Amino acid sequence: MYEGIKHIFKHTFTMKYPYQKVLLPKGFRGRHLLYMDKCTGCGICAWICPERCISMVPVTDNKEYPQNPEKRFPQYWYARCCFCHFCTEYCPTGALDYTPDYELAEYDRELLLWSPERLSRPPTNIGEYQSVFHGKDGNQGVTFEPVIKQKSK
Amino acid sequence: MTTEPPSPGISISKTAEPSTLDVSVGPQHPGSGHCRILIRVDGDYIVSADPDIGYVHRGCEKIAEYRNYVSNIPHLERPNIADAIHLNWGYVLPIEELQGVVVPPRGKYISTIAAEMNRIMSHLYGLAIMQGVFSGHTTIFMWAFGDRDLFIELAEMLTGARLTYSFLVPGGPRRDLPFGFEDRLSRLLDYFEKRLVEYDRIFFSNPSVIARAKGIGVLKREDAKKLGVVGPVLRASGVKYDVRKVEPYGAYADLEFDIPTFEEGDSYSRYLIRFEEMKQSVRIIRQALEKIPKGPIARKAPLVAPEGEATGRVESSRGEITYLVMGDNSDKPSRVKIMNGSFRNLIALPFLVRNVHVADMPIIYGSLDYWPVEADR
Image (cartoon, rainbow over all chains, first blue to last red; front, side, top):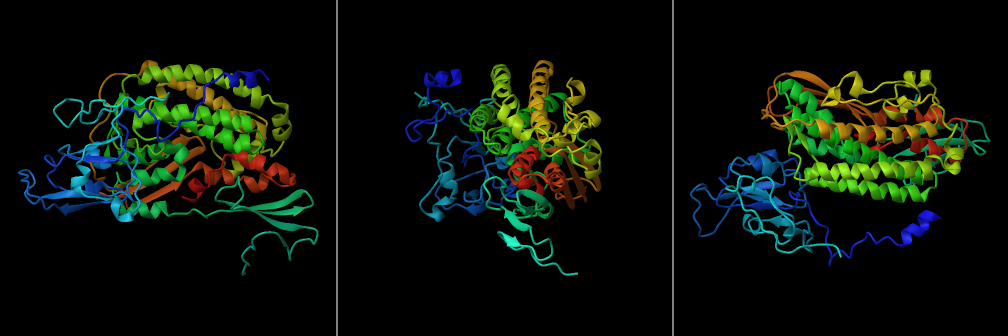
């Protein structure tokens, strides 16, 4: 009885999802971010991938990549990815990073194939986010400044 | 001798006495998950039971021979997502033994904290669904699941994922404790200890729960030893056996904790043993947070393991898990063998449900805390 009355005065725990979002911790393992100026195309990410969702593909753009003359970059097939992020941690040059993006649903199955160019786009879901892996010493990678403060009201 | 495949649904047995019926419980039964239990009933009493497992067999052991050592981690922890760290740790220990890698003390402490958090989460899941819902108790379902989410949030902070952590790799854990983690965890443990008192009041001291679970499905000490059950089921029958004490791994050798045992061996004592274990887990985490040393968290382990075989044993929340890993100088294991608690504890089910009411079967099944996917591998 006392427990029941107590619950009337408690606030609700549910969220109106598309409008309110959960505050993600630092280092959340969302989709990957590729730094194309760092990737050497060695293929260790494709070797370590448990689901074999990474394939190394050549890129046809006008830019020059001095560290990667063959222009081979990882391409992710997100229908298979299990977000273990071993690719990020075993990358010898730090060319991959975590992002807080988790809304990856698509209407078309082929859109789940993320090309290197699409992977190198900055994340959209930047709330309270900071890279834990590459942001430590400041030189490697980009540390995202918090843009939107997502708090449940 | 050829045996006919068991028919689905209810059927009159041709071989047994004419008063008995064969009833198939599952695999779509709300409680049993991906497991079918064929029971033979005489009136309201169960004459015999035969668990029919294998609906979610995915050949983890065979897949492991085609992936390299690190790539195996995500799919070897998938069989039991509620207890991912223990399945992961049991696989990593023999590889470290093969490679001769010694994890630094801080890494061992972080692994221990993560594993004990996972034990609490897994026991809360069991308390909510396997014990709460099966005894028709909705309040404990909501409470335990709500509190489990607080631990999940902290695990997400530590590992980056809510359930599928893939946190331990050969050499140590993947990440250090994040900023503010110790403070949040100790505050959560303060809150959780208060909640444990309330759990006791609303569930374990509840007359309706005691009436349903006490004296049902008694597994005696000698029978438990003979059947080879492990983990909480064994300890509820009065055998003081815990891998964390017998063969300490991680930081358990430095930490003080008790192994709770009960003499009765009935369903109620199997409920209580998990409750007591959660209290011990809180104690372990508090000590580990105090004693955690400074220094590196992991050593760099090679991606190749030499020829040889090694076993690793961990005490998961459903019992002892044993992994055998055989290496052959390559980046892939030549054999991985898994023995886990769910599979060993299910052996006790046919013995426990004999001569009980049909309505008591969910209670006994829930008290074993059986996870079908883990047993099928």
